[in-house]
Image (cartoon, rainbow, N blue to C red; front, side, top):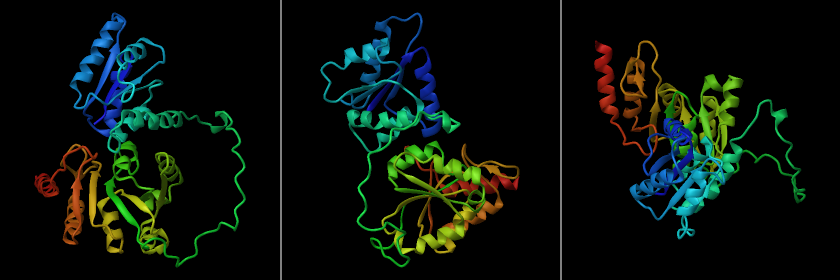
Length: 329
């Protein structure tokens, strides 16, 4: 796995790494190196050398630094000598960049390849509201005129094998957020993210927030449960690799009983509300949840209980047992 050094003036590097791990989970082979007011250049260089020595693969190192030309950059630049073919430095450190770098390690073993990926993400993460304050984009070059009108694909058309591919189906109270948009998307590589919720489909603000939270290159949609049942049967989605999200196990059960062909559910989070038993840091259940999950299991659905890909799966049976014990008290 590519080793990552996050380096900055002051404690910025340590803070942004903590923020990143709140979103994508604990990370291995990543270290924060900080240049404090009382430190000299040799101090942060020593931190970097110790970090590199601790990595599983010190032949692949990515430095993410705050300022081009600052002391952290200069010390990284001194260390990179002799490793120009495999190491890389990227300045302008921000949170989207760091999250992208962590997620990219699931699909790339090259520090330099990850460096090229995170640049676009870092730039794309800089946004402004109201949008009228954003700098005007340059007009794109004129596209060639299409030879024929480009319209909707006619109903009944069979694309590919005519069956949508579910690369991940997840139960998560928050639906689309950082852990999903980065770590899971990098791991399962969907071309569509579909949040399936009657509540959110009729809430314009939440719907817009989810659609805007999609990572670069992936479209996000919000649809009601009945619509998802129709989409599952639509042969025009044969080339779709979907990451599908449910707010609750009840929504997942309704979709599956309606014909959505999901055989495995990732249980990410179920928020605690009054009357629910806390069974882990991320999951709380009430009696209805227990009954719903047991019905899903009886239908042959397998459960994969973990927040992020790097976590070890927990036992759904142990969770159900603990929930029953807690609710019986």
